[in-house]
Amino acid sequence: MSSDPWGRVDETGTVYVRTADGEQVVGSWQAGSPEEALAYFERKYEGLVVEIGLLEKRVQTTDLSAKDAQAAIDHIREQVDAHHAVGDLQALRERLDKLVATVESRREERRQQRAKQSDQARHAKEDLVTEAEQLAQSDQWRAAGERLRALVDTWKGLPRLDRKSDDELWHRFSHARSAFSKRRKAHFAQLDAQREEARRIKERLVSEAEALSGSTDWGPTAARYRELMADWKAAGRAQREHEDDLWNRFRGAQDVFFAARSSVFAERDAEQTENLKLKEELAEEAEKLLPIGDLKAARAAFRSINERWEAIGHVPRDARPKVEGRMHAVERAIQESEETEWRRTNPEARARAAGLTGQLQGAVDKLKTQIEQARAQGNSAKADKLERELEGRQALLDQALKGLHEFGG
Image (cartoon, rainbow, N blue to C red; front, side, top):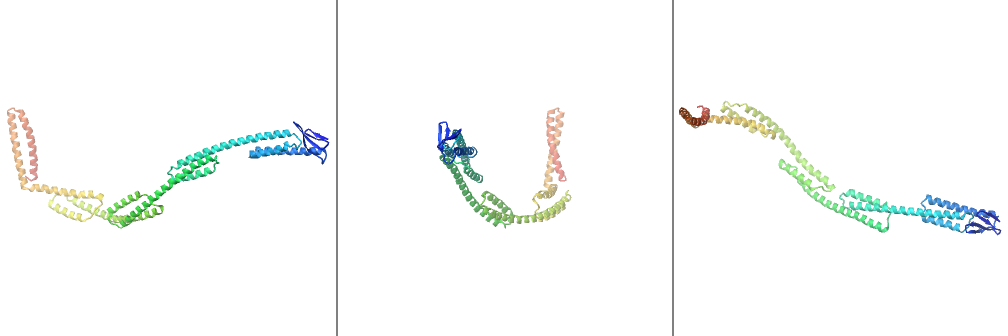
């Protein structure tokens, strides 16, 4: 018979293990000595110890599922409960019980983690739905479309929720995308219609612009080109494949017209600059007639100058008032001289002036006599009144004498 603290072998070769509930039969050993029997079943015990140790390590350091861990624990516990090993089986049970508690703790941690992740995923998906519904009303077609595509990628990267919640949120998300796509499609359909109308309008404008490109009616045609340009801008843009071609034709027609006009205007400006030089020379020649001495000679000379003036064409618009003003000044001086000469040589006007002067002289002399009489009589008030009247008549007489002098009287 052989024994150790945890087991023994009796005379029949039966092996026992000691437990808290008493000895339990481990097995029968007939092939060798009792010591070999105990050693064999002790090795089996050590095997269970190693197996439990490995399982503890897997539970602590890997993501072994609680289900698989529990199955492994149950498998080892069956071996322990079968009493097919010699050793402290109760210690093994306690380690297995502790491992069960650890697995349950890990199970609860993972449940809480999954609940937290699910809650985070729910909030994330709700945020995606809210943003998608806001984007569905946007008119920023490119940016909003790109953002919605990015939201889909984000959605795919999030874990699924419970089926009901996930389906409800996805329905809202999908509806928002569909609403945006529908609005964008309608917008671009309308835009295509507008661009087609713009193309038709611009083709008409191009046709008219090309028809006008050879016109030499410079002012009205330039004004019409300005109107065509305003109509062009108001028409909006045509399709991209038409817009550039239409614009090149429209602009090209304008360039032909304005280049021709510029050429003509440049030639005209050169001619008008030369005309201004000639008229300035004539104005200087006319100014040499002043002051007027011999009216007849001055009049003849001015007539000759003016005939040459009229034969010269237009001058630049901004220089016209000054050079024409110089000629008008000489012309006015000749006219004033003619009026003075006419008054001087007109017999009827001279007679009228002489008659008026005589009348005024008589009135002045009469007033002077009346004033002397009033002073002699001591009537100062009457004398003062007559003197005021005399002042007025004397002023008229002085003016009449001056006019008579102009007639040479």
